[in-house]
Amino acid sequence: MCLNSSGNTAFDKTGTACPETGNRPALRRALSRVYVEEGAYAYERTQSILGRLPGSTVIPIKDYKNVFNRPNQPAAMQKQAPALILAVLKPPYLYPGAAVCQDFGERHFFYTSCVMNCPYDCEYCYLQGMYPSGDIVIFVNLEDVFREISEVLKEHPLYLCISFDTDLPALEGLTGFLSDWTDFARKNPSLLLEVRTKSAALSAISKLPVTGNMIFAVTVSPDRISRRFEHRTPPLADRLNLARTALSQGRQVRLCFDPMIRTEDFETLYGELFEQVRTSLPTERLRDVSVGTFRISADYLKRMRRNRPCEVTVYPYTNTDGVYGYEPEHVRQMLAFAREKLTGFLPKEKIFFSEELPEGQPL
Ligand code: SF4
Image (tube, rainbow, N blue to C red):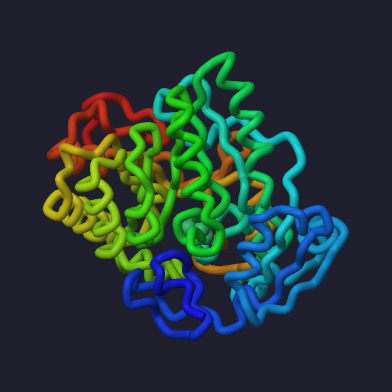
C-alpha cells in the first residue's frame, strides 16, 4: 500500500518514491508492527488507522510507555523502520511554548502533541534528544484535547502549535487529524493553530476547508542541506509548490527558514534559497516568515551525540545558558545575512528572528 500516493505520508510501503510528493524512496518495513494500548481499542480512530494498515501485525499492550519508554532502545535504527503505537493521551494536554521556539508575538503560546515522532528523519531533529524511541505514537483521543482547549478559550485566546513533535500533513492519510483540527478551528475563532510541515502533502491539505485561523508553516531549506540532513523529506521545489498552492487557496502560510545550518558556503546556499522563494511565490501574500539558526538544549544534544554521532551532532557548538548553538558571531552573521536578503522583498514586520538582531547592524 502506498499511502504516499494520496499525498499524505512519508512512508511508502512499496519502497518507491511517491510521484505526487516526490518523497524519497521509503521504508518497506515501516509501520508493519502496530502496538495498540488496551484503552485505545474502543476509539473509532484506532479502527480507522488499523483499517489503513492491512497486513500489519497488531500487538496489544497495556500501556504505550511499556514500549516507547523502554531504556536503551536503538532509536536511530528504529527511525529507519518505526513501529506504530496507538494510545490514549493523558493530561496535561497543553504545554507552554518553549523559550527556544518563536512565539510570533502571540501572548498565549502553547503546543500539544497528539503524535510523538515524525516520519521524516532529520539529523538535527531535537526529537532524537527528547524521546527514547524512534517509533511513532499516535494518540487517538483528540476529543479530550479539544475539551481542554474549549475550557482555556473561555479564559483567553490561544495560539497553539499542533505539529511540533511530528509532521501532521505527512501523516494525514493515516490519521485524518488535520481534518478534525480544521473542524475544531472553524468552530473556535479565538483559537489560532500552527501546523508545521516539511511535507508536500498537497492533496491532503487541498481537501481541507480554508480556515483563517489555521497557519500552514512550511519549513524550507536549500536542497543541498535537505539532501544531506533531512532524510526522506520532499525536495525544496515540492515544498514551495505546497506553499504556493495553499496561498492560491487563500490559506495562511508561514515560511520557516529554521534551522539554518552553517556550512562553509552558507551564503551561497541560503542566498539561492531566498532568491528561489522570491521568484517562485507571491511573497506579498505570506503571513510571515521565521528565521533561526540551529540551537538545541544541552540535554538533548548529549543524547543525540550518544545515539547518532554525525556531522550535525558532533559540531563544536557554544553552550549559552544550557542551549547549544553556533558561536554568537556566526549566529549574528547568518541572521544578518537572512535579514538583508529577506527585507529585499518582505516588510520587516513580517520577519521574525529566533534572536534579537540590533537594527541596521552591518554584516
Ligand atoms: S521534519 Fe521536523 S519533526 Fe520531522 S524529523 Fe525533521 S525536524 Fe524532526
